[in-house]
Image 1: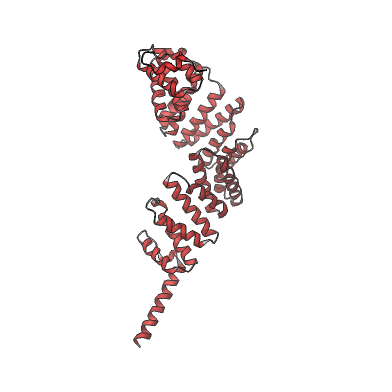
Image 2 (image 1 turned 60 degrees about the vertical axis):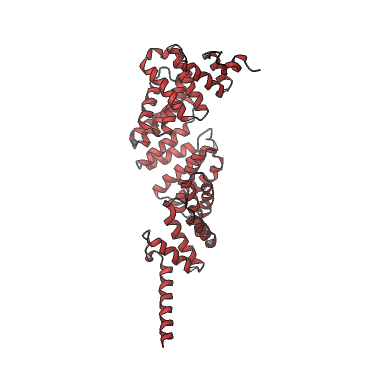
Length: 385
């Protein structure tokens, strides 16, 4: 049964209250809660009530995936808290921790790393911080430091995170993924390999949606160690687990990095499937990369007509990312040569000359052009007698 107090909150005659907002949040009525809290903040609440309302509004908006608005309200609330630290005891502990963690995460997502670091360190300094919140803040801080190219600091924080998560039973494998990536960045490859294998073999096992990322990192480490067989094994495993990743952005990033390794190590069947995943992307750059990877796989598998058809389509599409145009044109030249369409190969090369192509890059086309030129000269001599 719905609460009449909540039903009447849209009426200008009914003043919004923090108690009603709390009930709406508890019942998952987030749209209603946002309206109540916005009206409440715009009124004349006490400092303590205003602070709680600001932080609650920010966390509700984060739940609704309204990141920009959530950052605005959470930042406003934490700014007021920092200006009047005596109010910290008036904020429910769970809300306070959630507000700092949410704001830190959202700032990381927005790549505002300096402010994210400040907020996450403030979170870690909160009194009576529980192990679960501490581990989340530590992991996000390690990510910030890594993205800021402060890898040694990231490694130190990452090791603290692994210890914290193990002690609390939290998802230590996530911390290990971040730690392994930082170790990889500074070429501490044996340590990176050990850490990522521990993540993959965690008990209880990681969710399937996480495994694709772990195998991607494992493949990158093996690639840097020069172990081609292990790279190919990890790439195949990563591609298998991608089907369980429902987060579009993470899924495409993992697919891109796996595809690059698959191309380098000639895993053409895997590359074709990864290319098809990316070719359906809503992001033009990822979509162009996907078609290039798929076309490369088709060429590597000897399916030259299909490769050429994909290249033609993308080269005639004005939305194709300029980054891959040259690579697609080179594929088109090679594929056209393999199926005997030398005139098309020549035409693509002429267009490619503007992009810096050299005939020496295409020995078969060079041989064909020399041969056809010599034949034309002989015909001319014969005709003139």
